[in-house]
Length: 336
Image 1 (cartoon, rainbow, N blue to C red):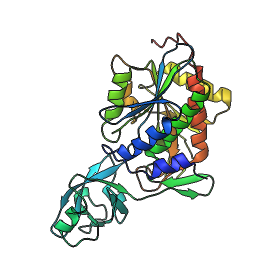
Image 2: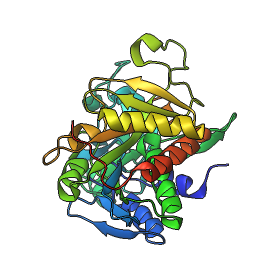
Image 3: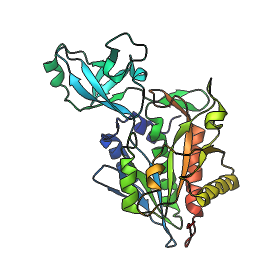
Image 4: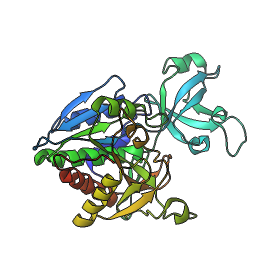
């Protein structure tokens, strides 16, 4: 069964730069157990205070999703699109979308089997430009319709698993930490505009100047036809949390994540990358530098209306985030 909070997060519309509906859910839920604040970009911070005067751990999980904006309305009322995030135009072809709540369907102006974004149009059912502009405006956000559906094997498919799954993990871990606070303060940051710029993470990392950061995201599940562990490693659905190792990752925090997972019997894999393609790429160089770790959830069908994850992997990451936070002792020295 899909947890109610996860279901609500997945259904919300919040492409990069238009995360308001998602932020409202996060702030409402987090306010029941944490101190909640926001900033001028729209990122949300929820804090649970520690018990031993330790440092500050910031747990980042970006709350935006891929999407588009209305860039033009022609005389017949068809909408053109400007992409938000990095995804293929062909993924949206013949899909249902919502334009700030207005339903529509996506067509192809030509015959290209792999259309560009300029080849796509959205049909909202009107007959002309004036009718369209009575319902929407240029620059309005567009999201694909792909509500969560349960699959066999404890799996689910939905739009926006990237990265609402991680927002869910962060909030559930913080909820557990609020009941029995850890030594350090813990701040969950639901960052905005990760898709395309890492803007929310960069500004939040500078503003908070945490002593350490744990970034949560998704990674490529490798148990699909044509996938090779030679490219992305081995991270099948059901393998637990993927712990990243690479230049952006502080080695002591990587070791700590692995140690905590091993000690608690939490399933995990090791992911290796030069660049994380997560908020960590801006957080670890924020201010004077922030020691970072990254934990990801394996996911099939990246940046699509049917991103697919396994619920047990979310549970593993919740346990790991909580264990990681509880392991940070006062006076921990992370200088290298």
